[in-house]
Image (cartoon, rainbow, N blue to C red; front, side, top):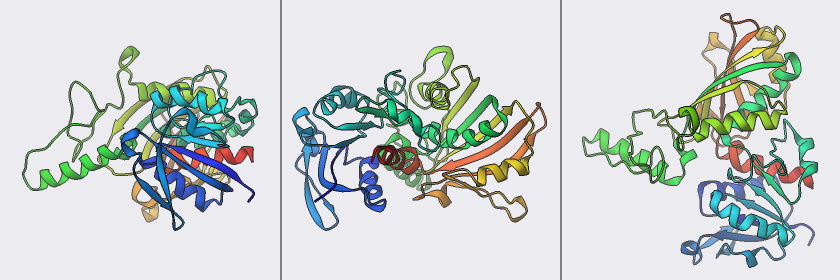
Length: 339
């Protein structure tokens, strides 16, 4: 049977399960499945197209005979096992932040920099979910008028923090509505010295704090955008916020351009861009929202309007399913570039 042996590391997590769905939907030529997770999940079984497959512990020997390995189990696991998978002949597409800023590792969004995949040495990094949806929109605007500066504020769903965060939002919402005590254990991140309620609240803190009181999530967006766009000196600033939405990240993006670009022309350019869908009709109260983008692979943009506070400024509202385009789908699109 022609095709490829595919391993999914972290298969029992949110992204791992969607990776299987998207591989099937896009008819990726899978010859054999290798489902990998931590030791505590090694006794489980998962059904794929009516056939049961065992979940195995992710160890170096598990990658024998694997052609493509999709990693979505955290940076520590990627650092430990991704190089082992490459040694055994697999092409690794890693969804963690472990290798993204390594100059020897391509960081790919297929609609933006597909040519960078040629330089891979068996390991390719999938960008941060918030970065992916933003650069898909920035690329056509940069091609048309040149990016001068980018300011972004994100409104990120709890699914970006994992299944435990999704469960906590649901449990907290029930507790608040029933006037019960609210348990706080996951937000802003597991193991934080203090945890906050996310139900009916917003938390301006994603991942740990780094230099100048920016969070790691904010610095990811800044550094990754520059690398993907090939603009190492592009001024970018970000504020990332966790919001009580189950799935789908939203972003308010402000750009300054080198050349003037009317809002209507920007809509036309974006509507023709790969992977972008424009929903922008204020008169009919139409604009992208997370509930409408769940399960979709496009990046949705609306509220396109001129920012008259600066020269050549535009405001945009960008929404995408962070588990699909922000993780699983983009990873598989990267692998498709190599087929």
